[in-house]
Image 1 (cartoon, one colour):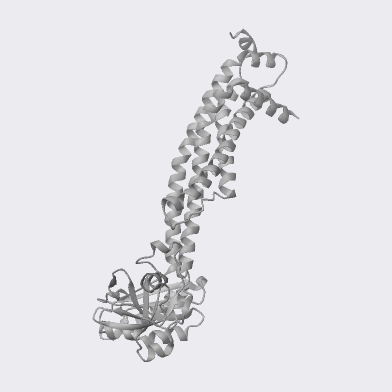
Image 2: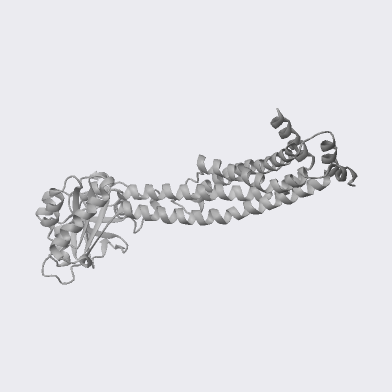
Length: 402
């Protein structure tokens, strides 16, 4: 009952000085709001990055080989064999060659930003593409060096008005028959020029012929499971080391590694910004201590009367600590509400500022609970000194106080 009575008394004292209380809580409100929004932004960015990587294939690895004039080379068949021999770690593989010097043309139009890549028949599935029209590349297309291609949604709409299958497209001096169109991956069709929907995929054997090379220096590999990323990476590296005997002649990295690094970077930035926002909480705590000292001075006679009537020091101490904690708790609640409001507004504004992008700024329950707990804790800690001063007042001197 004492706690409830003390809490009600604290609310009455706060209500009697509304403007002063609001100004006192301002530092707490700003600090909690900043923490809520910053943590929510960090969560939103982390989820957005994860979704982007999932679209590319979080269980994929990229292999780059430069060989440094080695007399031995890892052939395509050799790399295929590595995957087949390690089914527990590796699921599929595709050569990945970018065509050099091939300008894409359709009629009089030139598409300077369209990427042309040589891959095998498995690549579209590996890259999480869906065939929207026609078919994908097939094994016989690769084996027989057929000049066929699969194009992205952007090119199909811009160059062929959505009716691309069966048409020809010119890449440099070569003509390719379009056998399939990929479904769009991008969220905004107007912003796909040069993006992942502005691509042409041809058989890698044809790309090797056009590039005048008999060596593939880049591969995309799909792991059996993202949980075995380290073992899968080690398997590829060991196979390449067996050929080149030099770790500096190749580089293997996985999307899960990149995702982890980006998440760590985001977490570090969020932590630094949160610490900076925490300064507002510290300032708010100092404000609470200051206003509680003022309150003790204003209520010195009241304290003297209560002590003269038998109130113990711990009762007076408890009263002022609860009042300080209540003030900071109210500031924390207002900060949380304002933080959620700003988070919702920011979530709605992101697509307007950056068309095609969507980030859900969601603080999360843990951030809210921690922010509220810290705000209350700051009020109690910074309110203790004024409360202790009030509890130790001499009742006779307090009654004489004007």
